[in-house]
Length: 199
Image (cartoon, rainbow, N blue to C red; front, top):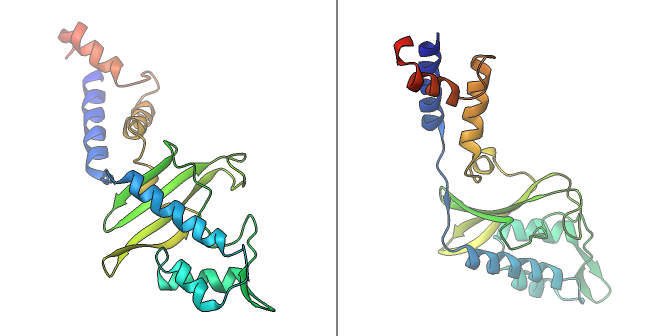
């Protein structure tokens, strides 16, 4: 029985490793922090005064893709008597989230894109986003990095793998479900070491 359980545990471990989707934490974390923070400040600056539409697009151009820039302007920029101005609220769409830009903020390269994201609790930061991840997706456009999406959810294939203990946690859960008499994989291993005649 113990030998069968041990073999099952090994199979589960191998399965977890095969299904693991590798992601890469980028070495240029500080550069992406600066880029995303500058994009946020560019967006916020649009509420400081009235401008013509061409100037607004020029301010956003270094940071947002054309498509996202158009969405941002459509949702947040209003025509005034003397031009255009953004009147953002705490939940205005397409704004870069209020990142901490510290160990809480994650930067992960996934495929050809880079994700900058952070887990927000109900009371984290000046704006409450609820208990979930918020982030931005950065894509390369004509040789330059641009924010292509502001995300209210981050793909699980990325968030599941940012914590080093996640795989162990998943494996431990699978092992516990195999047999109610054993609480972790350590029990059958110790039995094998101390009672080899049983095997």
